[in-house]
Image 1 (cartoon, helix red, strand yellow):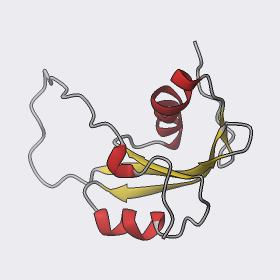
Image 2 (cartoon, rainbow, N blue to C red):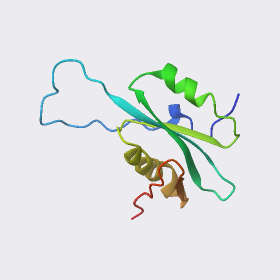
Image 3 (cartoon, one colour):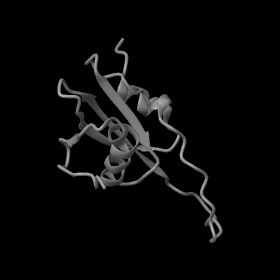
Length: 114
């Protein structure tokens, strides 16, 4: 079994948001974005794949994370619908404070670094 540098269980919970508009009634199809990657030998967080998963679908997350084989593997799910937003959050929450770069090999998105 691979030990992940940052496993999805270690991801911080999103802060509670106050909504001025009531939640719509009826079924909603809420998604999260799961990013998979690794820390490379230059200290960069490299995102190698991105998956949309239903919120709370731990079985799907476990199956995708279970395929990671590198000892420097990293995975985190973000409560956002887009790959771009997930990569930005990954940079802000994991790379920026360590002065590390983030490389997005999936879509080539470069996070805002200011």
